[in-house]
Amino acid sequence: MALIVPAFGELLKWAKPKSINETDQKKLIADPDVVKRYSEAVDELNKPLGRVEQIKRFALIDRAFTQESGELTPTLKVKRKVVLANYKAIIEEMYRE
Image (cartoon, rainbow, N blue to C red; front, side, top):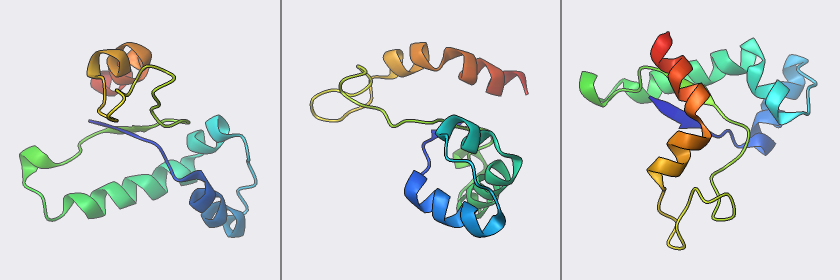
């Protein structure tokens, strides 16, 4: 399982020639073509990995983890409990699939 934050600048550059003109990040990551693009990228990255190391499911999220949101420590380590609480609905949905 993975939560993925797209590089939105690069994603917008990729989307424009494909006639995906959405600029709202939440709507952009919900576009089926964008999800397909990331699915293909995850599949490619999974190729050299062993089965237990592979990302089986993922969700795109519209913002990076920050110290201000409490998701990162001052040394930029992820606070798992906070992330799990903040993205509980998304994570539970991934387990249901």
